[in-house]
Image (cartoon, rainbow, N blue to C red; front, side, top):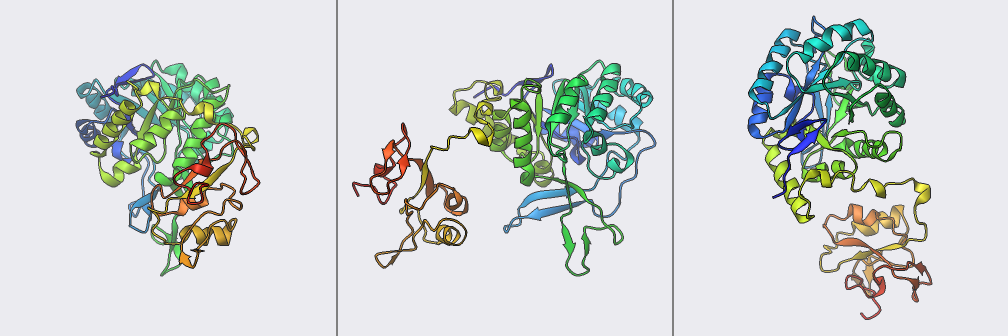
Length: 433
């Protein structure tokens, strides 16, 4: 099987899956269990100044569930570590000694003054950790104290704090970026200008999950009051992928190593991040929902995928999809695809017809020759893909590029150099049917 050994910022690990800085990396007990399970690295939960901060003792987490009660979104109001600095440093030193082949980066959040960085950076580095991750992304609690996202939303602050850390550190420095900005590129450029060796993204998204329907107060709450938290999990993955791809494809930031974070639930999610420019990935929510043993599925699935693609290492996958990402204005407006319904797979639920009839282009029948039958009316289909998105049966509805010239039945211009849609076996209206 493909070799998953990965090198990131000069640190070699047995696989590219790290635990993100979060509750799962809060102490040696957790990290030791994670490494025993097979994780390639961990970013220690964010350290700050002593004395440590105080977290709430009421609910810290809440979830967005699917109809099947599966967690698809997660909200967290927990702050950085509330354990004494010395305790953390002692445990980091011991874990690195016990697991020399695993990556240990330490997440750090410090006030915006150079003297504090000059004091704490050498102290943390003395543990033998492989490097730093600067937490410029936490959107709640710490941002109210002038740290976290309060720094990450101001490029000048990002560059300044990065320069301070680089001045006193001899190990690599990753800058963790917040998604709570309108454009990820200015923060990424500032991190590079400050000397960052890499960026990681995304941190969590500002969010309020819901209200308590009995009391009509915010849920969850602490003694009757609540605060916005950080949203993570599968629901934020599209946001993360967009921002990773923007950094990877933009001239001023391309080539900068990226650690991808946000909604990595299975090996396919990891493939998305790698193909769009990340060199390794960090996982949190999936581990909190399913436990550390998910690493087996992550590594096995990724290895099999690489084998299927004839790739021998993760590095061959990194950035493969980046050249296909462009601005809307450069899309080929002469390209045409049509939806095709496989009648053998169709369960006749009618969802495709309802959504197309009510909200789109009235391009799907519900009756043919007096029988309940769902077929695409190719003259009306604009290739929007909505029917594919709502169909509950995998591969029942597919999008097929049409051939060159003019479709004799519709008069529509069709593309050159693609499969002949008019004779495709899945097309119930094919000309030889």
